[in-house]
Length: 151
Image 1 (cartoon, rainbow, N blue to C red):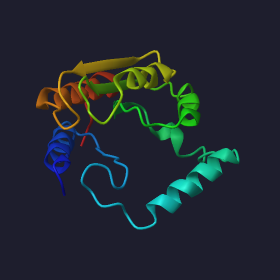
Image 2: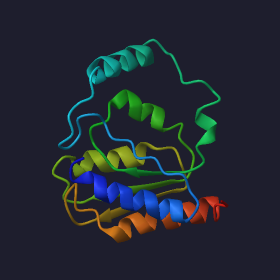
Image 3: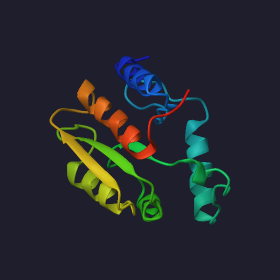
């Protein structure tokens, strides 16, 4: 499961304790994980679909009311142009000394989102050095923007 798993589980449990559903999305093969079979082809198929102008079904996107993201710099420019359409509240975490992401590009990525209700939390440390309080801040963000979830 790698070094990321215990930290992601802790964050998911924290969100669940407040009544929120939690999903962590990592690219297959990120960190020390083995790429999933077919991931390269799936990524190529997605790129072709986007280039052809295909969009996700309308019934999928409006269901997301707020999001917490890890600032990354390895996002295609075409995707970042679409980020301007994202107007939901956003909480973005940036690890200041992330060896896997360029800080300036990560800041550009944050700036690209169209939301006027976005916040950036920058902390010292590398990619896997996210402190527990940073996850707690994300949970407070959801409580602030979504209210207390009901079970």
